[in-house]
Length: 367
Image 1: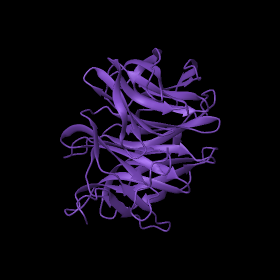
Image 2: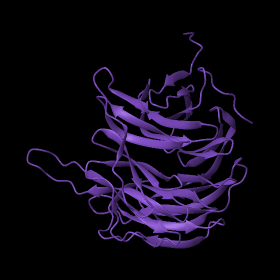
Image 3: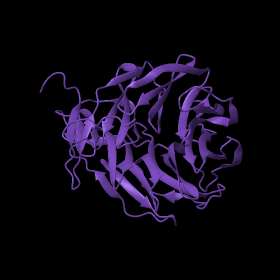
């Protein structure tokens, strides 16, 4: 193979085998706070260097479109959502501790940034677009033993005004770690890692454990499941979730597998399906996206001596071992952005993955 051929072609061995093409690696910036969002013609990256938050447009082929621009100082972008016209980001003044949470509307071409809209105080803020408006989540009141926190949801209209806000006051009260929000046609599912108080078996240290728990909320954020929905047992961890038009799909890691649970509109949970069997590996971080009638799962793994660490897309392995955080962002035209870090480098990298490659050639970017 000629040394000038930088892309990697992989064929996924499944009943609906398809080829993927992974673009050359690109470095975004020396940062650990990057966030990406897909737009109509590519992606936008947000990241902080020191006290300054920057943004840059990324084309579908992975090239940086134009130059990056500074947005503001003294804030970190925690989440971003595209509504078809512009991007709304949620920011925090500090990371890892409760601090003011604000929303900003940013033009898709990064030409303008709105004034700050105060939302509340908390940590781990997220935002998802929902039928012209947005749902924002964050955590409050982290417990004294650092095992999770209480979840808050806010619904914003197109002007970013809060139309409804509530604490997810379930019984028992959630001790939420990582969480995801998946809007449906009239409400949303919130799924999270339910942090379990560690035990101290004789001769062993304390390991914090988790299960996966969820709740359905209606359009006005009324809780439909006062006791929550138990999706998995202890020893499991949430990946992500989405609504496919008929049910919610929740991806999680447990029993060394990458698994999928389907939740009906009624809240009934079906028997889990295995997306990725272990194959001598231990999967520990997972993210998945729908692609037509297929699900593409990306997972970090620790394997045998000859395959110690790596990243898998379905049952194909990429030839590099990223470190956290790793994320997949579904884009337009059958492509997705894969972002990651490399230990011990303090920098964010990304690649574009073409899920509909043909003949080992990258398709031209559609303008």
